[in-house]
Every structure is written in structure tokens, then in C-alpha cells.
Image 1 (cartoon, rainbow, N blue to C red):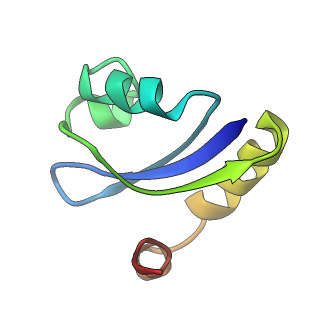
Image 2 (tube, rainbow, N blue to C red; image 1 turned 30 degrees about the vertical axis):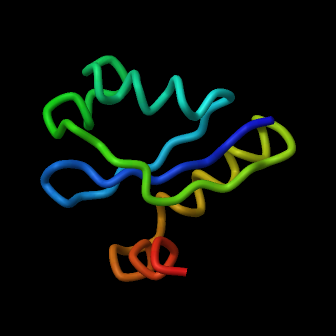
Length: 79
């Protein structure tokens, strides 16, 4: 089981990623070891996730989400 996810950072920006273990990944972000972008924007809060059948599928979905504008990401979070 793999996931694509969206977290809201402390500065209200969004970060999107893909992982095989979503709980561990969010913990890593909050420990400052998840990604360079989130390291200085802690704590992060999981606001959206989607289960994918494979890591390859999760990466494709991540690419799509990363190319959404802020308004589209907010719509994703709110639905």
C-alpha cells in the first residue's frame, strides 16, 4: 500500500509527497528529517491523502497534485 499526501505547513503552505508508510513519513517531516522544504516550516499537519496501488502510481498522482495551483489544492483538501 502506497500513499500520496498533502500536508499543511506552519506557514500555511502545502507540501505534497508520496510514501509507502504515511504515519512514519509525517513523523519524519515533524522531526525535521522529511524534506528540505518542510524542515523550516514545522510542524506539518496531514490534510489530504490518497491510497494508491503501487509506488509508481503514487508518484504519478504526486506529480499531478504538485502541479495544481493553491486554489485547486484547497478544493482537494476541502472535498
